Amino acid sequence: MQHSGEGKKLVILGSGESGVGAALLGQAKGYNVFVSDGGALKPAYKDKLTQAGIRFEEGTHTLEEILAADEIVKSPGIPEKAPVMQAVREKGIKVMSEIDLASRYTRAQSIAITGTNGKTTTTLLTYHLLKEAGYNVGLAGNVGHSFAEQVIEDTFDWFVLELSSFQLDDTYDYTPTVAVLLNITPDHLDRYHYRIEEYAQAKLRITRNLDSNSYFVYNADDRLIQQEYQSVFVDTNDLPFSLHQRPDIRCAARYVSETTLRLDVPQVQDEGPEDVSIARSPLIGQHNRQNMAAAILAARVAGLSVEQLEAALPSFSNAAHRLQPVGEINGVPFINDSKATNVEAAWYALDGVKAPLVWIAGGTDKGNDYSTLLPLAREKVKALICLGVDNAKLRAAFDGVVPVVEETQDVREAVRRAAVLAQPGDVVLLSPACASFDLFKNYEDRGRQFAHAVGELAKL
Image (tube, rainbow, N blue to C red; front, top):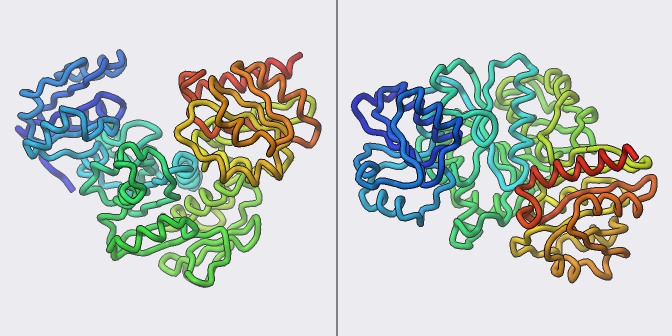
C-alpha cells in the first residue's frame, strides 16, 4: 500500500540499522526526515545520513523538534518509560516501527518469525530454503539489513523477517503472509511489568492483522501459546506443529519418527499428507526439530515442494554460537552454544546432545531458576565447569547433582579442564544459561573466545 510522505515530517528515534534504514526510506518517499539519538551515532551510520543530506542529532533529544512530527519511527530499544516517549505519547503523535513504515512501500509477500528462543535459526533456515529453491527473497528484521532500506528499491518477491517482541510492540498495520510463533518463555519481563501474559500478548501481536489469506504457524506443544491464543480473535489459516502425536489437535506438521516430518496442509497440498525427511539436516536437538518444523511449514506454504525442501536442508549453515561444533581435542567434540543465555535454551542444548557431557555454564544470572535442568544434569552431565564471576547460585543448584563441579574465570582454563575431564565418546558443551556481561562483551565475544581457546589447545 503506497503512502505519500510529501510535506510530512517524519522523526526517527534511534539510529541503528533499522533507524537509518527508516530515515533513508522516509526521505525517498518525500518525507521531511529528522533523526534523533540520545546516544552516539556509529561513524558508518553518521556517514550514511550525511551523504543523504538527512538532518540528525546525537547525545540528546530536542523535544521541540521531535514533537513537531506527523509520525515517529521508534527504535525497538527505546522503552516506553523514557522521558522522550512520555512526551510523545502525551502529544498523541502516531508512533510506529521500522517494520510498519517499510510494509507500506513493498509489494513483496513476507514470512515473519517471532518467539523467545530459536528466532534466528528459524529465520535463517526459512530464508535458506526459499533461496535454494530459486526464490527472489530478502532477509531483514533482527538479521540481515534494514527492511526499510531494502524496500527503497523493492526488488524482492518475498522477505523473511525475524521480529522481537519489542519490534512487534510498535507494529500496527504490517500484515505478513505467514506469521510464525515458535515459543513463549519468560524473558525481558522487565519491559512487560513482570507479567508473562503481557509478554505473551506482545508476541501474539504478530497475528493482529492476519485474515483468511494469511497463515499462522505456531508451536502446539507450547502451553502459553495454547492458553493465550484462545483470547485472540483471528480469522486465519491456523497451522500448528508438534513434536508428538496429538489426538487432541489436527497438526499441520508433526514428527512421525526422529527423522520424518509429516505435513498436512490441505490449503496448499493437492493430495493427502506428505512426508519430509530431515535426516540430512545438520541441526541437532529437540528445539531445532521445532525450528525445522516451523521453517518447513512456512516454506511449503510459500510454494516449495517436498523435493525442494529435502534438497535444501543439508546445505544449511546456522548462525554462529548456536550449538556450533568448533573443534575436537583427543577425539572429544567441543560445541559452542554461547547464545544459550537463558535456562530454556540451555535445557534444549543439554537435551539435544546425545552423549555424556562436560558442561561449561555460568555468567550474569538473570534471576534464573535452574530446577528444570536438574534431571538432565543428573542423567547426562559428568562434570560442570562454572565460568563466571559469581558462581554461588550454580554451585548451590548442581553440587551433589553433578559428580564434579569446578569453577574458573578464565575461558582458556575452562577449556583445558574440560579436555582433562572428558573421555572419548563425551562431548564438551558451552551452554551458559546466563548472560555474558560479567567476563565478556556479549555472547558472541564469549563464543569466539571459547572457539579460539579450543583451537589453540587442539594445536598442542
